[in-house]
Amino acid sequence: MTVELLFTLHSSLILRRIAMLEDIQETLREQQLGVAEKILQSRGVDIKEVKSKLAALKVEVPSWGFARAGTRFAVYTDGTEPVTVQDRLAAAGLCHKLTGSTPSVALAIPRDGYDCDLIRQLLSEQGLNAGAINSDSFNPRQAPLDYRLRWGSLTNPLPEVRRAALQHHLDCVEMMRKLDSKHFSLWLHDGTNSPGQLSLFEQSRLLEESLRALYNALGDGQQIFIEYKFFEPGFYATAIADWGRAYALAQKLGDRAKVLVDLGHHPLGTNIEQVVANLQSLGKLGGFHFNDKKYADDDLATGSVDPFQLFRIFNVLIEADLAGLQSIDDVAFMIDESHCLKDPLEEMIEAVDNIQRAYVLALSVDRQALKDAQKKVDAEWGDQILKNAFFDTPANAILQTSHLERGYPVDPIKEYRARSSQQRSQSASR
Ligand code: PSV
Ligand code: MN
Image (cartoon, rainbow, N blue to C red; front, side, top):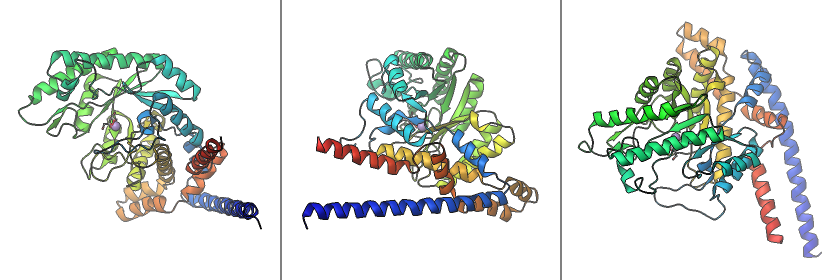
């Protein structure tokens, strides 16, 4: 027997095995879907409604998340990752083609450039929309926004630096108009590292003065999301350190200002779902920057470390939606992650999957039973109801069926890997 013949036999055996495995998986999915339907019915939940809500959930991806991010020590590139804005938006386009759930991309300015015509063209080629504009003012650039940014941007005590930083933010508002973006994401790196550096009252005054000028530049239909973070790069006094400060600013500014909750921006142990509930009660929740953390602002794939936290957050959002406090459709679901070890596109898809999973699980809670348990102050029963939904819902079957019914690959990461290896073998044979 020749080597070629042996190779052909071996390959066809592998292909037969893959086909068998796919058959088994399909049968399993159908069986599990039947089980899921019955479980949900027993909780007073209609599976059709879960699938249609899942299909309506849109997640915004960040252009920077498709690039290879650095660890604090080095950036470990292998030459396959996107480098230019063209590459990053092409990767975002592929993400949407594979998941059908990520139609908008958050842009970081100046990293994605100021050329709105180019960005518009790239987005439309990929069938995408411009998401939030992130006015990253932390990168040193032309004077006066050079090394002097180390003293901050909108709270910089040097007037010429502060004015130039404000101008950068106003340019970003103009870009929003040109790109038809509805959201301005504001995160400031401003903060001090020691008590003698700047008066806390002065820091607060400069911040409010600059934000007022920025807010006044917003047009109809535009909103500003104020992001807080308790540390980094300022380690003594960050200008917008917590949700209370962000809320107070948003409240002072007006209706177009809301608060953005980045899951990585809290001290360890913070009850984030309570922060979310408070903001919703106050009418000031704008949206999320999803990611996960173990120690600090780790920017890991959301739900990869603590999927139960993500579930608890969606549980609150659904309660608010049902109570008429804030519709889920009014919340901006954005991912903000730094992909430094895994393939960035794969990690992005993983994050989208974890978000969808958390939503499905939270939609599967027996709401009436939970209300009854809470009315009777039966804490044990209430917790059992939440745990049942989290641990005992066949979410895979629901997610995969939803992908298929909407015409997307059942397993987007597997499909991406198959396409990448096909591309590699095509270019090797050329
Ligand atoms: C800051 O840590 C942050 O969360 C802000 O959202 C920035 O825009 C983003 O990360 C990008 O570095
Ligand atoms: Mn963020």
